[in-house]
Image (cartoon, rainbow, N blue to C red):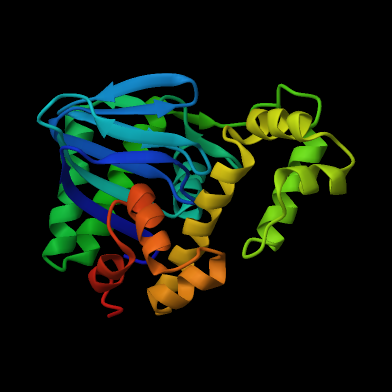
Length: 260
């Protein structure tokens, strides 16, 4: 399905570092419990529940019980979900989900159904079930999602810092140099950046590098070349951070997508 990624996994000791996605995330838990930080809250999702993450929302992930957790996850493109929201709720713009965990066993079975249809090569059924489960969750737990205003006064500096890091990703300045370029202090910039984006600049930069590397991998770029292009020192450096955020190493990611 264009614009949709799928992940079926069982994790015991896996711990996802704080990261974001450009897509939405629907994670139907089938066994065990997943715990994850969402904003300032630690939440848990178990069998019959779905973890929901909006695009560009920092979150983590780890086992909530000793035996770990199993889930089937869908990563639908943001434009696809917003299109369904416009049809279902007549919502335009920043539509999304208003809570991180939904207790809806029927919806969880629909998510599993999307996976099984895709595994069988039945794209029509997979697409139909995805639209059904999205519409169901939007009706019960959806709405207009407006980004929170930064708590600190340096919102403009934070946005400018993000733009600099995005542009100079392969060779970024130090925090001290970045603050000097923006005419502020390192501590003030650090505080403003965390308030605006939910993580400090160095964590945001690592996350942004992984996201850009993923786009390069999607075009068939070898992992070693993608690592250098986004500013990692070498492929093992990319492997480590990519696996922490995406759940699988870059090579396995490409093989699963038929690119290697």
